[in-house]
Amino acid sequence: MELSLFHDPAFWLLVAFVVPLVFRVPIAISLGLSALLVAWVWDMGVDMLSYNFFAGVAKVPLLAIPFFILAGFIMERAGIASRIVLLVETLVGDMTGGLAVATVGVATFWGAVSGSGPATVAALGLILIPAMVKGGYDKPFAAATMSVSSGLAIVIPPSIAFIVYGGIADVSVPALFAAGFLPGMVVALFLMGSVYLTSRKKGYHGAKRRIPVSRALREAFWGIMTPVVILGGIYGGVFTPTEAAAVAIFYGLFVGVFVYRTIDSLSILAEVLVESVKATAVIMFVVTCAGLYAWVASTVGLVERGAAVLLALSDNPWVLLLLINVILFIAGMLLDAISIYYVLLPFLLPIMSHFGWDPVWFGVMMTINLAVGQVTPPVAVNLYVGAKISNLTMEQITPPVLPMLVASMLALAVIVLFPEISLFLPRILGL
Image 1 (cartoon, rainbow, N blue to C red):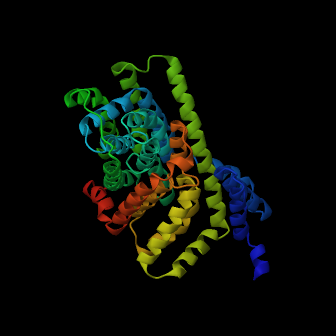
Image 2 (tube, one colour):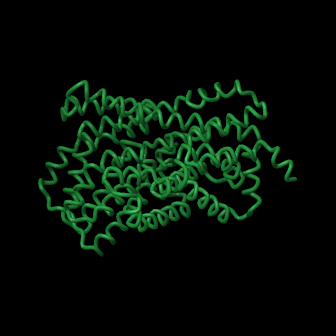
Image 3 (cartoon, rainbow, N blue to C red):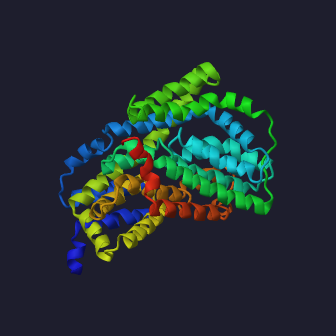
C-alpha cells in the first residue's frame, strides 16, 4: 500500500505543490512546476502543456479581466474615487463612527468599479486612511477598516472572481453578478455594524460637512453613474460582461478627459496602461499555471478521489457544507482566490451536483469566504497592501481586523442559511 502510494502521480502532484509553498515559492510557480513535473515523469504528453497553457487564457469571458482592471485604474485617475469619498463623507456627517462607516460604504461602491480587492485598497486607501487618522481614528483601525471592506470588491458585481468561477463551473456570469449584489450588501451592513460598535466604544466620530449634500451629489454624479452604465447594460441585454468592461474603459476616459479633465496628458495614460498590464499579467499567469494544475489533477484522478473522500465523511449536506467552508477559510489564509478556484473547485463540483446545490448560490458563498481570506494572515493580500500604504506592519494592523472578521463570518452564515438572498435577483431578472 505504502509502495503504491509512492508510485501514485496524484500523491506526488500534491507533494510537488505543497513543498515549494512551504519554502515561500510563489503560488503560480508552485502550481506550474508541480504540473510540469508530474506530466513529464509519468509521460502524460508534455507537448500538451503548451496547448493547455494558452487554452487556459484563450476564453472570451476572461477578456473581461484586463478590461475591468484597466477601467478601475482609469476611474481612479479620473478623480471619480475622491468625489465618491466626498459624497459619502458628506452623507454620514459627524455621526458616531461616520468616517469608518463611510469607508465601508465607499469600498462597497468601488467594488462595482474595480472588481479587485487589492486594487480597491490601493485606490481608496491613500484617500480614506489619512482622512480617518486626521479625524482622530487610530491608524491601525483605519487601515484595517479599509483593507477588510475592500474584500467586497470581489463580491459586488462586476467581479473578477465571479468571471473566473463562471468559466470553471460553466455558470452564467450575469447570473453570478446579479446574485452577488444582495449578499454583498449584507456583508457591508455587518461590517458597518462592527466598525460602528468599535467607534462608539472608542469615541470615534465623522467630520462636519464641508459642502452641502446637493453639491456633493452633483460632483459625484458621473461616478455614481458608473455601475448604472455597466450593470444596466448587462442586465438590459445591451452588452455582455466582456463588452461591459470595454464600455467601462471608454466611459472612464470620457469622464477623466472631458468632464473632470484630470487625465490631461499622454504620460498619465501611459502610466495607467503600465500599471494595468502589470496587474493583468500577475492574474493571468496565475490563471494559466492553475489551469495546468487542474488539468493534470483531473488526468491523474486526484479530483475524483478528493471528491470521494469528502463525500465519504458525511451524508449530511449541512455537515459537509460546514466542512467545505472550513476548508475554504483555511485555503484563503494561504492562497489567492483565483488559485483556490482552480485547485479546489474541480473537487467541489461533483459534491455540488450530488446534493443538488445551486451553483450560483454556491459561487456566491465560496466567493464571500475567499473575500474573508484576503484579510486573514499569513497571506492576506488586502492587509499587505493596506499595511504598505499606511506604513504599518502586519502585526499592527491585524488586531483591529478580528472583530470585522467575526462580522464577515456571521454575514456568511446568514447567506449560507438563506440561499434566497443570493438567488432572488437572478430569478427576478430571469437569469
